[in-house]
Image (cartoon, rainbow, N blue to C red; front, side, top):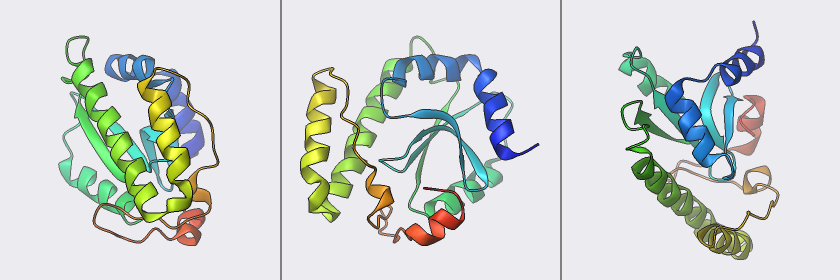
Amino acid sequence: MSLEDLAARMRANMSVPEKLLWEAIKIWPFKPQVVIGRRIADFWDRGALLDVEVDGATWHDEGEDVDRDEELAAFGVLTQRFSYRDVTPLGIQGVLNRLHRLCGERRIEIAARHPEYADRIVADLKRREEGLPRIIYPSPVESIPLGTRESTPFDIDRAARHGIT
């Protein structure tokens, strides 16, 4: 079974916390269960290079999580993990607040490094704050080098070879 087939199966069979989070963020620029290189992101925001993971009750392999996160970080991808205990009807607002802040920070980071995208990013953030749909622009990932918070350079050619872009 290919990763794309597995991702499609995972989209069709989301856990309860994943469904809850997806219902809350599907108007944001996230896509569920997306193949990124050799990995599948629970929720992927390509423009912010943000992978959001909902770790379930049966997942305990922290070593594999670290390896996975480091592999994606080499491409400039930031992984934000939430426990299934956080993604509940009572806890979802805290998760959404964190994601909103993190998406904004990542876009501001892109704007700071690449002023040619600053106006688009600021306009998109204002629209989001006003509850309006976002304007779809080509992702900065397609044409500019990015990095992580630690300033790891984003190599677009290397990322493309691994299916990240």
